[in-house]
Image 1: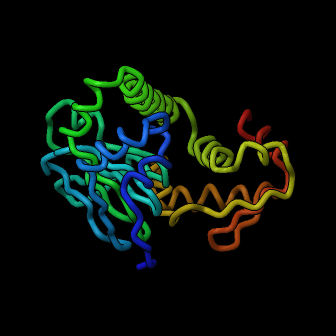
Image 2: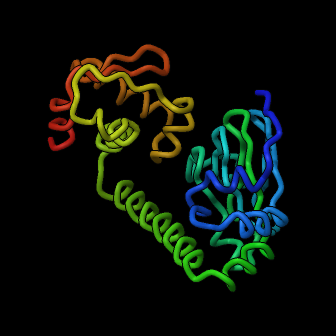
Length: 232
């Protein structure tokens, strides 16, 4: 697991968008209800049915949120990246987790207790708006996912994912290289595809000259041609 030099929790909080604007004394107060959690790749942070006592913010690493069926099949719901938070809605609903969380890489998280959040919500209306905005964005993304699964073909979903993963300033460039954030099985599940179907789509795109694949690295020779293929 990667080394991590101890840092004050209020310093870590100050780097997270949700807590921007809080005064140093407010951050120090919030930090009393926060603790660091370090998990190694493959470790489970929580399981479906575990009690939710707060929410998490990912400082570094990558976390997979998923659902397991009684038959052992798995559906990836979301891949959490550094700076993102998760679990806020479940915390407010006083429900158990309906997903599991597993580390895809060595990760550092902050767990913010429900009591600390409730205290800050009562004192700062701007913080209330930030929490609501974060949950609204999560709901909006869920609606986009449902639309994608219902209306878009597998090929459209894969191309949409590749384009979404590119930095905005590179989305109009040619000969762009993208490195997949995780393994193809996790990405396939996130896109509601089997791994075989995902691999077949990549193979078809390679055959059309729209991408070149080298392990996790994907070269897109022409963004214009790739975008046009989505519209077919």
